[in-house]
Image 1 (cartoon, rainbow, N blue to C red):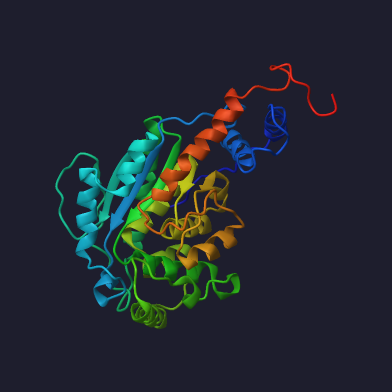
Image 2: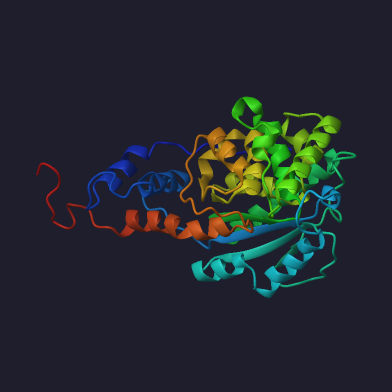
Length: 349
């Protein structure tokens, strides 16, 4: 499967920059909002970008390796948190309501049967991945099916009028999967040795962190360090990470703005970017996670996130919290007066 993503044309860049610079402020005075406004204009290929029907997608799945003790929480917490999402009681529900964001939860492979539920999309590829300590997490066929399903979900959002999507996840054990993917796709030369990119996840104590690193070392001893994105994803990924990577690629195909959350979401982006590098132009990085591996990921992409709040919850919470900044970038470009329209003297006038 190939993804058709075109880097945004830069034809409007000079006009966008002039419009930004001529607002009633000193040049650069709005800091990071100014290049963000430029990026939005280039993505949408307009001098007046607007955010339409913004949405958060939360991808959920279970990991076979979670039963080996790589997380501080039992695997059942995955399906219990999905129920919490559906009941409206999780942090991402609170923040999505506050920010006026649509919210959809996708069951990519949770070890639980939910039945048909409002707000839940059934994209289940199985009751969780295999235990990558013993065998590949998923087959190549499952990996391709996950990417295709994610693409379909993003295309459906675009068809419904959405042009900005934030990404979140839920899956006990998925920080371990993200650590392995980060190590494989960035490598020690990029500052992603296994110890550095393996953090405490849901709150492991010192002994638990040591055990987690030992187990991930065992996984690498079994499966090696594949650098091909699909091979790494099949070897160590989660169904939720795989479907999310496909959704990211599908969203970029539709020229949507991608609001990237923390460590696990960025591991999915590592996969998507390695498949089609042009996706990066469509990405806005919401925050710097407290998980140590996220810094290596951000360095790999040579980007600075919008916020640093020491978040490590996941669920897309960082993306939701960053959304008002994205909206503010579009708003000042569209609504703020220029020196000319406000009859204010500009510099050296």
